[in-house]
Image (cartoon, rainbow, N blue to C red):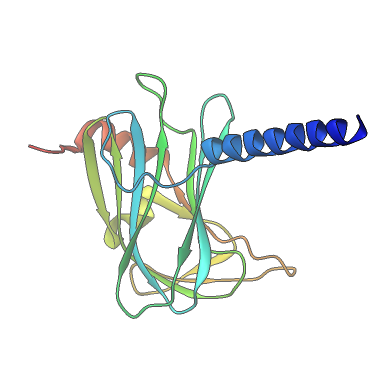
Length: 182
């Protein structure tokens, strides 16, 4: 009887653990591979960096729910494109906060060539010359004299460099953007 109870408990434990791991996979926020879906809000950033690190896209919706998409960015002399996408549930919902964390482990130089915002079949590409108007940086990022060139900065032993999407950028996607797939 003890052996049967032991196997029954073992079976229950394995079943619960497998259910938990399936739930975790479903809830994890991963990039959708650049698939253009009308209910996706996406940010594509073309950049290069002198130090590998884990960057992350952060989106916060009007209900204050946060989606974080982590992307490993490798040191490269060539530009690479990283993508962060979040599925939007409502007709006119845009994230109230959207930013790219420029890596929290290592000091680095980041060159951002362009940023593309897409939503509801519309898209707009922002060149580095437009970054001051449409994007902000925080105190952990120092802007270089060269357009699109940034250096991360550690303050009080903290490294939290953020490249933030301004509301003006989101509004320009609504108003001035081009329709995709035409």
